Image (tube, rainbow, N blue to C red; front, side, top):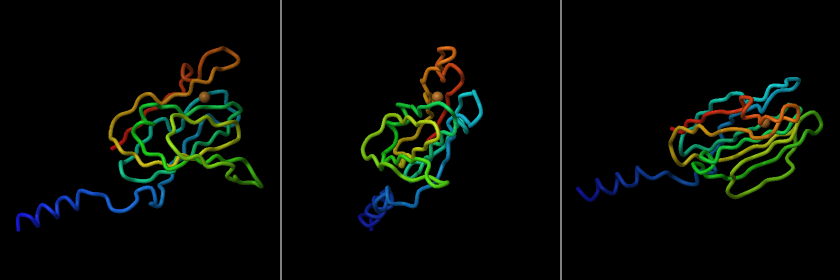
Amino acid sequence: MFTLLIAFSVASAQAEGDLTRQEPIEVIVELGASGSDLHFFSPNHLEFETGKLYRLVLVNDSATKHYFTSYTFARMVFTRKVQTLEPYDGGFRRTAEIKGDVREIEVFPGHRAEWWFVPIQTGEITDLHCYVSDEENGMTHEDMGMVGTITIR
Ligand SMILES: [Cu+2]
């Protein structure tokens, strides 16, 4: 009986199957906005849960390039892939699929990128930022408020 109980508790503590093959949960983040000179992440706080597959859609409808950079976050997720998308026929089409570890993603004006990942560690992340320099005033977008926080539960 004792052996059976141990065997059961070990089995229930393990995840079943390939976690990267779940139906992804879509989360959309806008990097700036069309017609706006302000630089920001919207939303500027994100929440994820470990063990779930996410498709983080980085939308850049603004007139400048932006980064989605958080080295802390990048270390706390397992990346399945990144897909890049370009405008096509009123929608978007994939132009590349990148596999392997990701540290940051830069998205060009009018384009999108999708980061497919499974969070593997919990924590409060405060280093999300964009360090592109503004051509007008030389400040970085981070200096101008393009920062964010992430919670992984
Ligand atoms: Cu930016």
